[in-house]
Image (cartoon, rainbow, N blue to C red; front, side, top):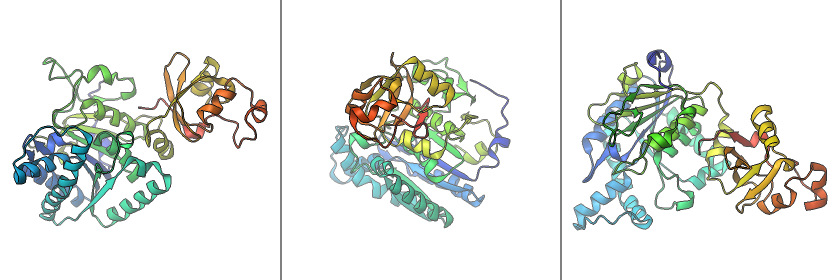
Length: 386
């Protein structure tokens, strides 16, 4: 899991397009946005662009900026902003303030910014996903810095990304980037939570994040943001599946992204997996939360894991939840161990009727079907980081 013999400079010297995610814990204090942090970030990212790199910034901070604005103008500095309506209202106030501050900070370096607000429902539709990709590609051709945030004011709990670490990982496939830099309040990843375990050791390199028990390592969240190290490591694992390394590094104080890219031993480098998934499989696995689960017998589990087979109805033992055709579902063993996720070709009601049945029997049970597979292997991602 831990390595120290990786030459970061060699690994990172070919990077040409970067997604940088910065959280509220870096940009804001309890009183609101920190202009020094924004200026410092703009200076660092502008230097990367001057090196010939493309930079996509995924930024939190709208809610914090909105709360700050309310306090400044109304003197109503209440703390009861945790319900969704209040967060969305604060985001509506603060998003313009956040972009104004970014625009001015980057303008000092002759750079132009563009605001991109995304929703999970927007990326769920493949056509809209591709349209967003085309827009971002044109902005990067123009050397404009896209600043991406979730459209908090219209997102519902069921369709929100939940945190910008998740959004940042989705933007890797969206933009075709080759490095994910996650700026956090901690100086990289530790083997245990350093806030509760002072003896915790830093991890300079993670070479197999899939084998890491991140739930055991991460038992806390920051007080300002909505993520925490758990969401950052989950995002890094998703990036690794795309074949993209992740740098988890402190964005506090005099951080230096350029030095990190030049091989300085800052933070934690998460190495990519040797076997990567396609951008399409990445999209289908993470564009939505699973609506239910299909439980399979041992024979079907072995065929999925070792033979690369599609899931047939005969291998299904049980169905959990209520979902329609085309829904994203978990694929689990009968005991409940997660094997992966996939798009179901049948509704849960149909699967209840055809589970354990041979393919030849399907028309007699549910009528003519366009597919024999319950989940086709092309629409399935095993070992998904959900």
